[in-house]
Length: 363
View 1: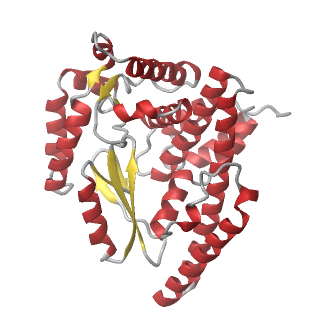
View 2: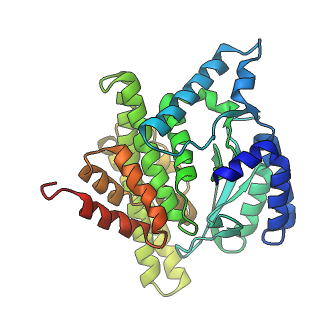
């Protein structure tokens, strides 16, 4: 993979075209061509940050943004033990406040997740679009085929080391925690990616991104700082929200497994959604510390939204249990996660068994 990165630095467009030629028959050709244009504009044409820094008219906001990115990159490599991938050393100006739009689908009466097959990375549970209108059109078509659909915006895609991922102009508005979370999350993908293990890949990136970003803010500002206290409150609320969403997910899964007819399953789904919304509205102030999730109860729920929350938040209890057993030492945790590349068929089982073997007898 390191060899690929060196070659791509020399001739990114040629490699991109070769990559696309190899995938043309595996994925819809017109889709690939359209996304290739967006990829070319946002990734291939991204400029080296050092070159942008050298411009005489560089504004202070952008220069300060580059400083923060470099600080986080050093932290990810030197403090957390992630791979020095070369990502986030280039800068891309884009319109708007996000990079792309993705579509995720789940059957409307089952928790059966739809996937798309891609060369190199295998099956993924989303399809990305640089053009939002295309995503909306795809969503409309899939709804007519009996799917619940989620259309959401994304900040970045990880190219898993095959290309150097840039930072984007809209990220200048991010606070340190959000920026660090995004960079560390994507660098975790570049460090460890197991083909066909989408849930695991997202779980480890979510865990390391959350914990790594919080550690970064704590070390930069101090545990008693306003910045870190705001992060702590936000993380607590996010865990509460994920737990609420997990309960909805498990209730749906149980109902879909036991009910025989489609009508029964759809009726149960609406009842579960209604109870979940009511619980959130009636108990919000006891559950949450901030107002971030106050409007969730008014938003539409469907299987795809619930599944996406579960997929990206997931059940992280294994990782937090191991993290605690390792003395909340994140670099040790990252080192252990990296070793799962040698056990790609059962990475979670390896983590649990390995930690038990390595802990001291009185641990």
